[in-house]
Image 1 (cartoon, rainbow, N blue to C red):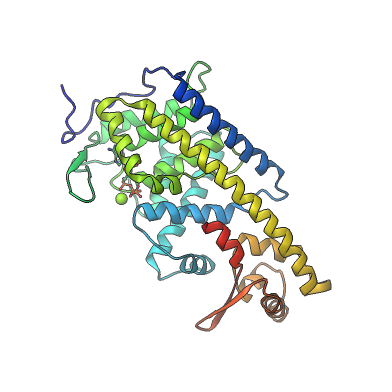
Image 2: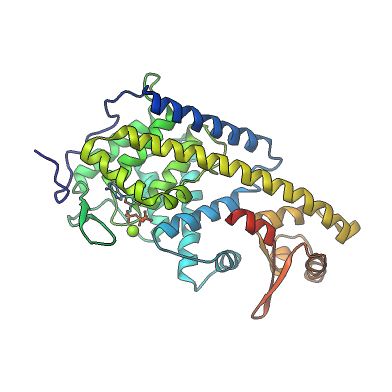
Amino acid sequence: MAYDPLLPFNDLPDLPPNINYYQPKIVRALAAAARNLGELKGLCATLPDPLLLLNTLVLQESRDSSAIENIVTTQDELYRASLEETTHNSSAKEVLNYREATYAGLARMQSQHNLIVVNTLIGVVQTIKQNRSAVRQAPGTNLRNGATGQIMYTPPCCEDVIRQKLSALEQFINEDDPNGPDPLIKLALIHHQFEAIHPFLDGNGRTGRILIALYLVQQTLLPQPVLYLSRYINLYRTDYYRLLREVTERDSWTEWIVFMLNGIEQTAQLTTSKIRRILALMNEIESDMRQALRSSYNPDLLRIMFMQPYLKIDLLVRNELAHRQTAAIYLKKLAEARILTANPIGKTIYYVNQRLLDILAD
Ligand SMILES: Nc1ncnc2c1ncn2[C@@H]1O[C@H](COP(=O)(O)OP(=O)(O)OP(=O)(O)O)[C@@H](O)[C@H]1O
Ligand SMILES: [Mg+2]
């Protein structure tokens, strides 16, 4: 029967599709993606403190990924919210949930012999949505064109069919077939399949984007989840939606795979250059700090300025970097030396590592 976007697509085939993975277009894009990703991996391996940049990179991605879902926060709201126990800003809260979901997914994968299973993904969506999301049980979910409201795709329905397809996907993700496609090509196939199954009522895009980051770590293509495609997807979102659809409608896997490989290539390049710029900034700030603080220079303070671009006295105290009074003096001196920018909001003075924020947002 011909494909009909108005009917649940229960004929969605399991992976992998039967295509030639050695076409020149794919081979070229794969080589470029692998080269750039390898460079990023190499750079990550040289970091003196591998976790140093993770927090800010993940938070930046959380912001970009949530923006695709129209959850918009300013850097300022987000970083201030990330310092507090609770926040009243609902968009910032959702972005922070996304970050938590990334970490929770990673922890779950690593505690389960590096397997990515259906429950890993359910855990991720539940953390993003802060609810008890589960596989869709009732019909009625479809994907519409945002402008016209026209139904573009109706995912499979319902729970049994979805569970069956998810379990096939789970097997494809975790199996190590030496004759199968390259892991980076698999990544493109997996992302499409997950979105096409569309197992949840909401949050499928965000969960699918976290899945990409987890898969790269699972495949040891990266030591930490630092490669994120949201910026690329946002930039080329019309192509992204069109290509997703054309795989279903016309089996145009080649274009889809090349699109995703180009995304990996471009994003890896961008992330490498971002990390290099951050490391250079860190050197610069270190020498400025040594001058400003003299004998009270403390490398842990430098470290926290790069893990958390918004500082306040409480945070230094909480992290046992200094007692309240000393912490206040440190921050004041750093502001006077124009290393940090003092930004008073209400009763609190935030001390902002603005140059780091500029690189992150660039
Ligand atoms: N034609 C299509 N076929 C398969 N998947 C699609 C199609 N069009 C869009 N999608 C996927 O559906 C996702 C949106 O689904 P959903 O609203 O559940 O996720 P979200 O995380 O809430 O939203 P968003 O991805 O917009 O942030 C898109 O990100 C995209 O990956
Ligand atoms: Mg949504």
